[in-house]
Image (tube, rainbow, N blue to C red; front, side, top):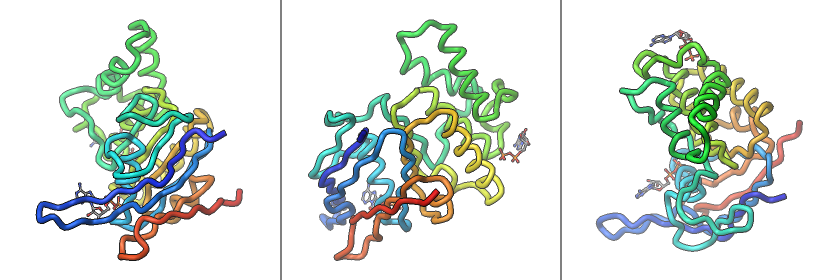
Amino acid sequence: GTILSLSGVTKSYTGQTGAVTPVLDGIDLAVEEGEFIAILGFSGAGKTTLISTIAGLVEPDAGEIRLRGAPIDGPGKDRGLVFQSYSLLPWLTVEKNVALAVDAVHKDRSKAERAALVRQKVELVGLGHAMDRKPAQLSGGMRQRVSVARALAMEPEILLLDEPLSALDALTRAKLQDEIERIRKEEKRTIILVTNDVDEALLLADRVAVLTPAPAARIGRIFTVDVPR
Ligand code: ADP
Ligand code: ADP
């Protein structure tokens, strides 16, 4: 069934001079439970704005976003977000960075349960050996894996990935794409990936939603394509 639905989601930004930039124009999109959907578009097409509305970080001017039928109300632990720039706290170890999110979200669980969850997700992304390292002692690919582990440890219903690989070199990106595929098989979670990389979208996703670029009349429209497997 449908886990997430957007209907008529519309958003413009108003600059300091009062100039209005329309970005999303009546976006309709239904995401099925367990589906991996990629949102593909050029830089400036509105991808980050779209995923931010889903994350509850940006409020649409019009339209509605429902999670399991209920309108979303701001950010929630049901939606875990991984940004383009890994927002890890530099003074904390890998373990502590992930634990911070786990402690915030899973208050109902015992200390031992939370510690086990942290270890499981860090191991899942292949960093079991690096639990005690700080971000400065990690490569870019490793840091982005920590961000993914942190989001997974929150056990969100939907994993939102906003260009998680775009800042990485081609080889590291390819490795992490494999990693995401493997995680997907193990976790069976609904995933929404924002990317400007056609190959990446086709490699990873079941369905690709194309967000058309900004120029005037064609702003913020969307259509989807099924990826044959
Ligand atoms: P993408 O992620 O596809 O590159 P964005 O959603 O970041 O696209 O941006 C879409 C458009 O909205 C761009 O023209 C961008 O300049 C503009 N924009 C994004 N965020 C803001 C903001 N906070 N204030 C004003 N304009 C913004
Ligand atoms: P990734 O594919 O995750 O970016 P790399 O290929 O860059 O990893 O690095 C391979 C290995 O080298 C890592 O598993 C890590 O142990 C080590 N490494 C890479 N960069 C650093 C660094 N800045 N500090 C310490 N170890 C590093």
